[in-house]
Amino acid sequence: MGIFDKLQPLAAARRALAEKGVKSINVTMEEVLSPTEAVINGRRTILVGTNNYLGLTFDAGCIQAACKALQEQGTGTTGSRMANGTFAGHVALERELADFFGCRGAIVFSTGYVANLGMLSALAQPGDVILLDADCHASIYDGCRLGGAEVIRFRHNDVSDLEKRLRRLGDRAANALILVEGIYSMLGDRAPLKEIAAVKRQYGACLLVDEAHSVGVLGNRGRGLAEEVGVEESVDFIVGTFSKSLGAIGGFAVSNHPELELIRYASRPYIFTASPSPSTIASTRTALQLLRTRSELRTRLWENARRLYQRLSELNFRLGPEVSPIVAVRLPNPEEAIFLWNGLLERGVYVNLVLPPATPDGGALLRCSVSAGHTPEQVDRICEAFTSLRETAQTAQTIGTVTSPPARGGSV
Ligand code: PMP
Image (tube, rainbow, N blue to C red):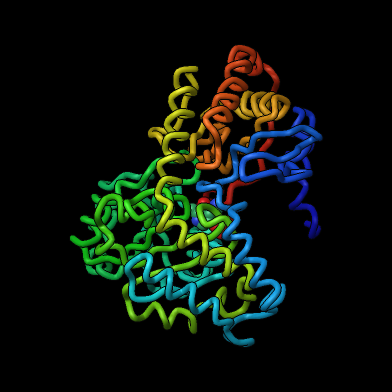
């Protein structure tokens, strides 16, 4: 087999999508107008697929902090903290993250993806065992692979399946690492974290929660699902990202375990990549302050989430199981999803098109993510676009089949 042959199924899948009218999954935003609007294909378009939950990407304070850091510290760190040294802002952000989560320590990583790679590869190695919710993000799967531990998947959000698998481990259960997310990125459903924490305590295992989609979204102080359901004491590690509520790019882990500090020295994805740019760190520090002080953003986010979820369920779309800032429209096949996705784009609404194998159940998804930045009128316009497509979507089922690339595990 030639080096490029393995890419041919992808080429075929892309050709099939193009025939169905999907020119490119990577839609280009020709101009970004605000956290909720961009110009796409020359048309002013409402963005409903950004994960920009609090709409902070255009916050004046965040922009000002980033500009100041750019002017004072330059455009980049140009290297890893281990080799090239640490900027004071990175250390300050780690202190502020630890304080925000009420934890002893924090580590900043270059992205959320790298945070999972860095944490899991250092924590779980050959001889260790990981219990992983089947719907976990690709970065969690990849982190497990990098570490080389034995991976046991349990059924999504099924605590009795987790418990059964822990029981089967016998003595090894006390050293197992359980991996779950706060809000799951595909369907917007939450982990049953109270119950998972109870099982973790019962077996003496370790628990890591990826709160990428729940920091700034859940909890009285915006600390995520563990705060919301009152189990922060039982969570050993929280991993998160700066690329959603915090409106930038980067990742982090926080923990009360003093050993967290040692992970820096054991983690190749921390050691061998450049640290985030000073402007990124500066805007994230300001955004973290806003998470503390502007709880009305969270209120507005949830009002928008409830509004969109309710209106789409009234239209009889099959949605994720609970109201969430991720409102997933579940469709039986790629053709119907593509038809709706194209129709929405033509009506000035951009959502995420998710096709198998990235979907949890082999169906297709239109993933909407609402923002505190959406106005009620924008949410209404999104719903009107769905309404006008509702009837015609039914007829799209006859279009034919799209071939999908092979699965590697993990959600997007
Ligand atoms: N974890 C989860 C659950 C995610 O959904 C994502 C991104 N979608 C990541 C980690 C990776 O975050 P980042 O974009 O910062 O790399």
